[in-house]
Length: 427
Ligand code: BJ8
Image (spheres, helix red, strand yellow):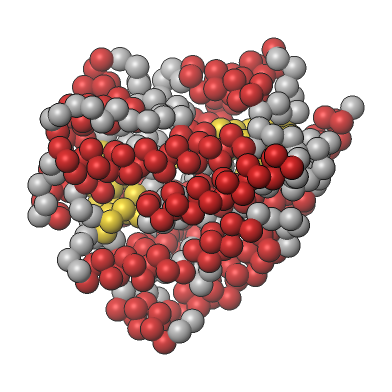
């Protein structure tokens, strides 16, 4: 770490001891999971660079933006509209929450037996370890699951949190009205924070910017329909994870370069694995940095993950292009609200669309099997797995259901189960 970085961390009141402990571990994990892969696309160098030194250039940019008077808004969930935050002239940063490194600090306040993502989200702030979190002026939460919404109340004691209400149903007129009104309140909160009144032009511009990011991610996902896939599941996951905190315009540009390289590979029939490797879809809970556990196990066992029905996969891009034709702020807010309610999260009831998505994706990506991934105690995804297994069975696609956390204690057992599943697919 350069002296410069150390000074920045001190200014952010980072716990240096804990931070240095993390820095001693994370690059080794990354090396093992990522840099040992064969035949990676050259354009992945950019994502290696972004993630290197824990957060590479991005944190420096955030601090420079702060010095220039901008506010930093942190978030954890897809339901916080990027377009609105960008239009308010703030910098948006998706927080991690994919490691058990801060369990001890989290468990001083939170119950031990809760979702690891919730524990990590709180723990990184409690441990004062994450420069992004330390740089944030506000965190925007949501009422997607009970654990998160109660955690946000406690997190609010450590940093300002504003929680947006997400309805329980997604397809009713009341739900659309509720979410639109919630976004209107969020807009006022952001304007209060930044001192910038959001205009029609601001929103049109930010919608266009985020639409471009979603479009290129969608193209990246679609390259994996090719057989053999031109990119590993691990690399594609990394790109999706970085999408949550990188500068959106640079991210779009770099991902466009990556997609071009992948399209060239497809033309040449070049892949990262043999075309006979079992093609797997992962469906379920999101995977935040540095949660690469399942992907690493599956791909080290000779299979390839070709699609994620996940918030770090198709759930992010499935809302498509947001309509920016309205000429009033309210009209544009309504378009945003409606589009975001088409994210098929298990927090909704019913959530038939997610079940249908699994069937559609299994067919489109010609998968041999599906691994349903639940983070421990996430009841929504865990229960919904039953419906997904049933519909997949109807199209003869086997499903393996796993429930895990961020520790490596079950890695051996998971590997055995995954390998047995892959063997079964070959028969
Ligand atoms: S849109 S999936 S990012 S809520 S925290 S629900 S794992 S028990 S993260 Fe999510 Fe938004 Fe939905 Fe996506 Fe379960 Fe854990 Fe809750 Fe979680």
